[in-house]
Amino acid sequence: MVEEHKNPDAFRIIEYVCRDCKKVEQIWNSRDGGTPASVYCGSCKGIMLRTGCSDQVDPDHKPIAGDRIIIDITPERSKEILNQVIDKKWDDIYKNQFSSKEEAFKHMYADPIEGEPDIKIVE
Image (spheres, rainbow, N blue to C red):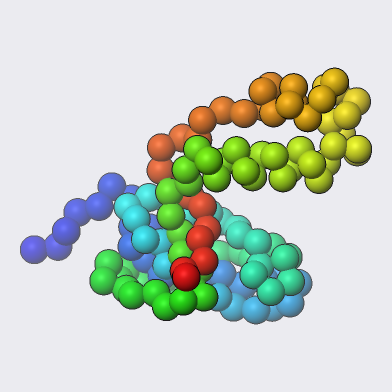
């Protein structure tokens, strides 16, 4: 009997290719949830796009140290990412809209949607 999943990307190994350095990477979706169409390249920090080819279901995949995997984002990680965005864009964008980085954070933060993806490096 085939196990049913809520999402067609559940437990798939998803192939991405970098637009800039052309690196190809396979990232395992470790959960029954959707996958991003693009991720940051681990090598050059460019944008990697999902290729759509050779995605294979493998619920028993065992990633090794250094592999990147797709996990559910946590509220803590979501806050960390937003703080990084605010810091990076503060002088160009947000300083003209908010009196402080804390005010920008309070205005912009929303708890992550259940099942929203994040990328983790396996230790």
